Image 1 (cartoon, helix red, strand yellow):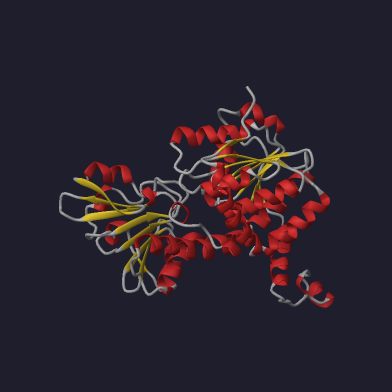
Image 2: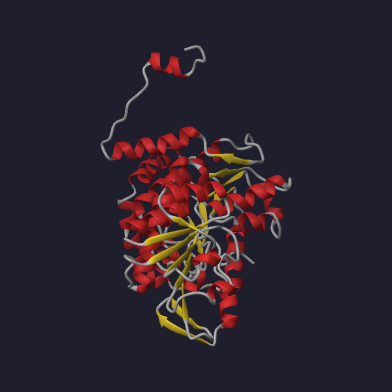
Length: 419
């Protein structure tokens, strides 16, 4: 039985998807520049690329750029609630791209679509969260001999790959795109910071100013969420397990405490840890009436919605994408987007210009993998500095900004121990 070219909701949605894609494309000058080079060089000719990333307009621009660079592309989502069906339909009308994703996929259908994307037989995989990698290291190992390398978009995925490497089980080289400076300094901090609050505010229509916001986790994403909450006029509490990050949050003006201490105080709770069971039964039972909880980590296990369901006396859809869980003490705890990634399950994700940088890095990293077929070690590999710097230089150039350059004397000075 041959593999279907597409499994999407409705091809008739494509016109709306094309509009979204073109809006994103016009605001992604760095990726456009990279795409021009891909079209001219065709570095992916004869190759297949499998993508598991949130299927929305910015991702569509990446998929198109890779296809225009000569690749045959198969794409699926990395979160059942982040797929935009109109964008998926538009991609299905795009030459060289197979699409396997539907908004609201059940867990079984989500896995089915991941597997369809891999059954395509890729040479390169581009992951967001490591779901394709996990299948390739378990149920679909038979496809690994055909894979020359991969790229990973997010912190959670890199963490999963690092564990595989430490256990001696990693099967192919992967570029840790998430760890590139032009990714985590901008996407994780400014992208997450803005898009999380855009999603929360659009979904709840509640004011942030004057409220108490509890941010669980003070990595790059947590820094962004806390910074934007502070800018919106909130009082911010940070919870952490890392004493150094806790000190950093303290010295940046935030209150630092345990989740047990913060639970009775917060109006909004945002988890950004990459771990599980960050907010659990005992925390829900201490929360104010109307407290709003959401998750900005990759997987939907940080806010234990299952435990909340177990103790709720009544569950009500209070507003689109907001469920209220009434507890025996009379208080109601609100959950946005079922505890899934709030900026995508309840919004459009990161701003276009932020993803321009991230997806330019992805395109460049995929080109690097293709150019170095058979030469890369089986390892989690840092994004080469030349790729990172090139993306930054293109961005500055599009804005008409110039920076200083070291003189030969300065180069000699900083490269010598003998001053």
